[in-house]
Amino acid sequence: WSVIEGVSFSLRDGLDAMRRAGSRVDEVQLVGGGSRSTLWAQLLADVLQVRVLIGEASSVGGALGAARLAALSQGELTDARIAAVCRAPKTLHRFEPHASPAIEQRLTTFRSAYRALRPVFSSSPTGSPP
Image (tube, rainbow, N blue to C red):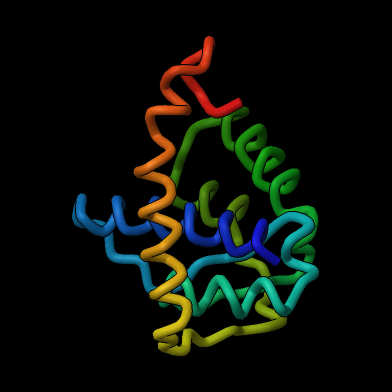
């Protein structure tokens, strides 16, 4: 559980950075193997405080995205072409965010631990976490 919670908290930090830069995000699509876990989908909704959607074929969403990029690279980028190639998948499940003081407290602890460990990461030979 701690691993998926840690990944979720890292995604929250990224989303918060996007918000500080002016992006507005109301919902996200969960793709890849994690999209098979309704438990993780709800945790993400609660941590990110956005609606999480799981669409048709979400478990292969990464591959589908790569295929779409390849298809788009093969011709002129018109609005019609983009619309044809980048259709949104049919939504199968929606997870609405719930406020959770417990999650916010664990997020605060996660961020404190990360700040405390940052010098350890930067002193590794590659400059990144081991």
